[in-house]
Structures are given as C-alpha cells and as structure tokens.
Length: 279
Image 1 (cartoon, rainbow, N blue to C red):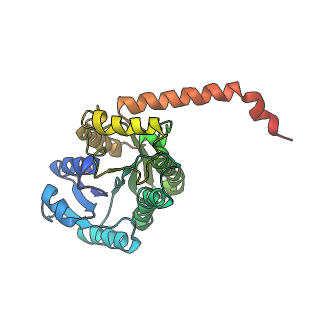
Image 2 (cartoon, rainbow, N blue to C red):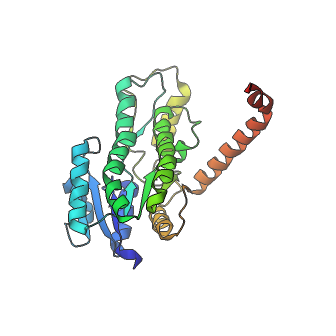
C-alpha cells in the first residue's frame, strides 16, 4: 500500500510543513516531523505514536540533524520520503543586508538542507528507493524582485543542487523534485518567518514598497491553498516518474513562463555575440 510510506518533514510546526504533516497523518501515513521545538510539534500534531514522531532538530547543527534522522529510522525502520521544507524569508536590498544576515539565510536555507540530505541519503541509497522534495520557491527560478536577492539566491541554490542531486541518485532508484511554490496562504510573510534588514537604507524606495506590500497587502491574501499543495506533493510521490521541476500555484506557473520567454528572446537577440566566442 502506498500510504505505508514514512515521510520525514523539516519545519513541520507551521506553514506548508504543518499542513503536509496533518494531511499525511489523516491519510494513514507515518510521519517524522521536525522543528526547533518538540513541544510546539506536540501542540499542533499530537504526541508520539505508532504513526507520528515529533523531533526537535537544529538544522544548522549536523550532529542534531544526524541524531533526529537516526531516531526516525529507529522508530519507523526507514525513511521513504524526505521533505526539506524548513527555511525563512529575508527581505532587504543587497547593499543594506549585513554579511551576517546574508550568511545566516544561507546557513538555514541551503546548508541546513544539505545537512539533512547528507544524513538521509545513506538510508535511501541502501534501500535503493526514496524521494526527496526540496522546497525552493518561484523566487528560486525568477528573481526579479527588489529586496529579495539574498532569499532568491538561496532558493536558486536549492534548485541547482537538486538538479545535480537528481542526476547523482538516479542510479539508486531515488527521485528528487524541486518544488517552486508561488504565494500560499501561510504565515511565511509574518514576522516569525520573514526578516527585515537591521540597517535599512532609505534610498531603496522600491524595496520599502515591497516590504509594505508583502506585510500589509499580500499577507493573508495569498491565492494558494496550502492543503492543496500538500495534496499535490502526495500525488507527485505516487508517480512512477515524478517531476524534477514542480511549479505550484498559477502565479508560479505564469512567472516561470515569463522567465522562459524572456530568456528565449534574449538568446535570439544576442545570438551573434553568444556564438562569436569560439576559436
């Protein structure tokens, strides 16, 4: 039966991770869910059971990650599906964000994700099966948003490393999917998940406008339903040949097409320069 699979979800105490965990548990799947607080997980998803294991995990501490994965395997005997969902947003111009602010976003969104993959793959490789969903963002494909440069670049990194991962693990029967959500109605745009620069520069008017729009107008008005996103991931896991690139939300679909059309136009416009550089 398909619903006897074990799912390991990072960042499961809120947002997309929480909705996915709820949906999976309701359908009888086995779920290991991680967060920085085990208490928060228990509050929103319940106590440890045959089907559910709440785990406190610090993404940027590889020892903590390794321990959480070992506990999950000890409890469920395996991990069939990994969902790297944990991460946070950072909205600020490249000039105004400090080195520390930028590096921290990479530590969580990229290197934390790598910690989880590095410690999960030995089990999937041994089992010769598995599916890894890495949650990027439409901003990991289309980055023309003032103020989102660092965040988008972390998500571009997630997309790039997942393409390589898919090629590397194919021989072991393991699949990898990059998930590019558009705007979904979660708490991603709230203060707990979207950080602003410590030292804003007033000259960046478009960045301030983006901050205001996301905090005041877009927040709680996003068109995407997180429950339907959860359903889409479960459905994709059932596919024999799942997508490598999965855009979720009509907005994400449209932005991807806009980017593709723009790149194709410029390829042709500057073809003579592109092909003129050989010996």
